[in-house]
Length: 159
Image 1 (cartoon, rainbow, N blue to C red):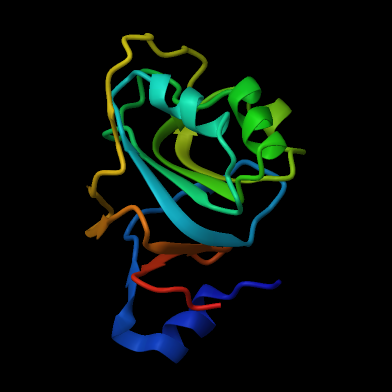
Image 2: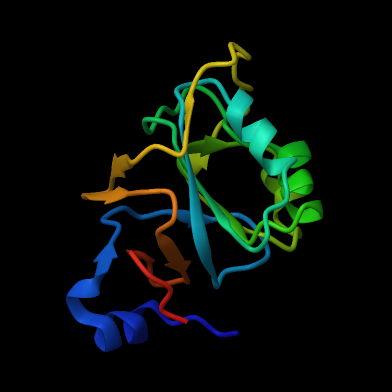
């Protein structure tokens, strides 16, 4: 189903929040949306690895990595697991790696940029918490929609 964030903003007005950041698309899917699951972590993608191996059921994983450019929170193996397990997309307030391998994957992937260094595995982070970046709060259970124009979040399904 085509997603147009401008049309959704026009139709739903103040019920829609716009993430005030410029993300780069890395996966093959550039229009995606779904119910949100959240992770807050810093330079440790242990929870990301756990979640992408769970049934995604068309959800979008939103990862608040604090915007750190020092470590990658997603690589080709985890992106492949997300595809296999039915995640619609992953939005990372942080960085990823394996850009060439992720590009053809049937997954929406947004991040601030790329860095080749992997994360430490300290089993740290929080799942299902409200995350704050790009001028808005995003909670598990919200709905996120993304296209080439931007990323929006709403408290209820818009499509």
